[in-house]
Length: 263
Length: 326
Image (cartoon, rainbow over all chains, first blue to last red; front, top):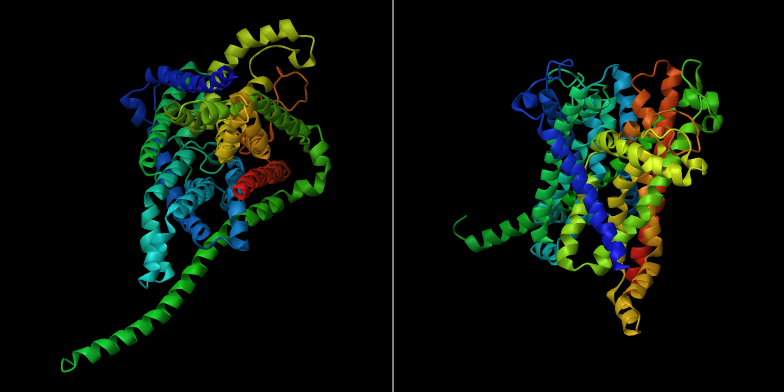
């Protein structure tokens, strides 16, 4: 029996190594400096993912500005005063929201923003990513804030500090590493999102910094390269994937390193 | 002022404290209101999603009613929209994924919690979790260029030779289709099911294991007792995996073939709800077409919301049960 379960475990890890190894093997050959800075070009003329990298970072930055603070506040609410019936409902809905397919957030933002404005935009893309981030950050924040020992709260309260100062100046700073790693995981998660961006940020072939225009992203660029019929573009899809997966795994490993010592 | 410093300090203190106290009460009240309002924001978002998507798909809801769910034709040119082929594709690919992923995930979780030494279990658990970190679009790319050729050349011809009399393995083996979709989904949900089953198994008290071992049970018999205890939690993990499989979009869009047909063969192409939204949303011309696609999104939302809620309740019931017994 142990052999069978061990085979399952090592088999799953073998799949991981196979997938990652194949990406590295295929991606490394078309990776170059030009590829990282150029914009996409027609088949046969080279081109790269420079604008897509910048686009992904802009989308991610905007989404984080909205999603991370809101997630932290809601998570703190759930941990500090969320034991009543209202908190229970909020917690349940937030947890359920984590499992909602990302493409549904795209549809929602399309109906609310894109359809009203009449054009695809960076803001719409960032909003759909932010909506995905909020429940993820909420959950990790709640877990981390609950880990802060009661004695610290009691100590601060006994010294005469009001509840809001205890939370703001004692509890949150104590849980900060955990909260930050949770936020990083949320960032890594939305960095890999494609579906909600397809019809919100849409994609673009140029460097762009305007928030009311379509914006390129690495994932959408990979998708477009991958489903094209051209060998050359397939190679570019692998190279872009190598960049994306490296970034995401890098974040995950940092998080692992940070959390291993503390919890 | 300086003539009687003690008094001054005392009165100053007293006044200050009183002012501070009202400030604190006010501060606490504002703090509580702001935090609660932010909590309510989650509910507002979900309510807004239901409202907006219902309103945007009203045209299609009115025109097709419940017939939308049973209609078999998807013809944007004639303006006929039926979701059955997509619902079929979503269910079949998700069930296929669960059939593959469930035994493997439970096996991995048992190995990591019950059998492997701690020094091995921790890094291995991390590696399994890394599978969940790989983006969907990357799995799609890998499926197109690695999984599909593998299936086409080796697995599918073999299945056809040995089990070809079954309706599931008829038709042309071209790699792209329901089977590849199910397998890629299985890889993607394995880390999710594993993680929950691990948590559930870890929640079973050590005393249970000790009692079984003390009564002379073998290690495997002990594991079976632990599994029996964690039953509903494992069910919750499977339902959670189902929710993920239903909503998975990019990988399956790239590999399932995207043809709205109902076919018993797993070699044939299919289509899922999420895929049709991803593929056709930007091309949807005409209000009815768009509202039919948004209705698909609404269906996906409601189904995954219910499925996830159910999973959450099942998993909660285990942690409550063990919390009581401890």
